[in-house]
Image (cartoon, rainbow over all chains, first blue to last red; front, side, top):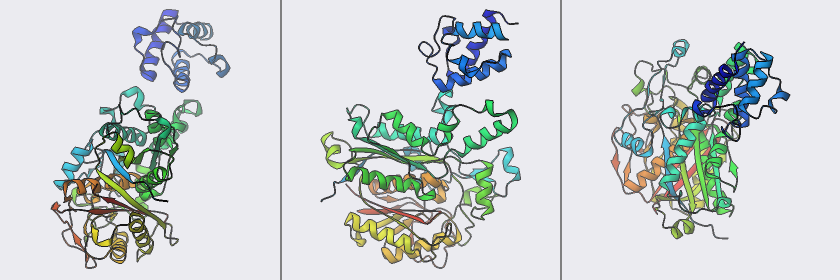
Length: 80
Length: 408
């Protein structure tokens, strides 16, 4: 099972690929939309890529609760 | 009601001859071909193994993250629009965005996205289909992305009439300004379907040249040896502007868009009327609309795609509507056929011919068809003072569009 730190690193890789986010800017307190400028369609891509990377199923109605990188990390750590 | 004058104040293009207007125009005047062999593995299975591919890849101009949300047809439209916008000096013009319109069409649209995402659907399942798929493949995507880029709020439109699309977009842009709905319109066409499926489809119709061993000689409008068109890709964009609006901001004016004619054949879904009657009516309509005399139209940038029937039907139409005097050219001999972008790119060539007093050449016209009774600037560019020039575009479905440009 991945540690929180490993999940942050993995999400940073996905965010760089999908949305061009600088990995150095990715940390747990950052909001996907407000701080990292990830638009709604790109957020869908991030979720699908994260599911694949961490083997976690992220239901569509859960995605709206994942406001920050930390929210995503908590969900992935608890569900993978 | 008098029609307000409409002028062209900016042009932009990315084509098989160059990544911008200047390099494309230089290559045209030099008579260079943009056609080459397809080296992609998928071309092995096709009967057609040549195409006119972009001289500059969009990835050299648009950053990777943005590009992955754009179909190739949208990317090239944005590249051409950026050049035209800057060329027109609109960046700092304080334009009222509620008076800015967009008319940008494509003949086929986001087919590359559709086919690539279908591959993903088949191989990996529905959840892996990109959430960007729909805005990438929708036919109004290029117009919408261009409209978004410049904040256009007077209306964003995406006409589609196969190979007449680019010219039809310019004609609708003219109408938007004349009807008072916009002061400035970003108008043009885009196409990027160099992919095995569209090529196989056109090839199955026997519409394309199979001169695979001699790509640069494959597009040869009006030549006896012509055996079909060569598929090209790219985009052309014009900035159309009400003349008094352009004058008020001291804009540089390339040409007047004096008139347009649009008709439909009502004859066949793909074959042009053999006597070109619908095309002749479009040309006559453009002359009337522009109030320009036949004698003043001394140059025509013809549709002439290098197909056996179409090239000669257009000659019949030109003779009927204009007479024998104009000097013709077929720039598709060099660019290949950009389908929905062709009419826009060729409008740009027509405008530059007026500006520079030179007709770009028709290359590969080595053995003219016996029925070619008009004067063509074959092989070499020809100096010519041009008061008025016509640009023809015709499309599958029987669409005919004639645009008339005059010296400002």
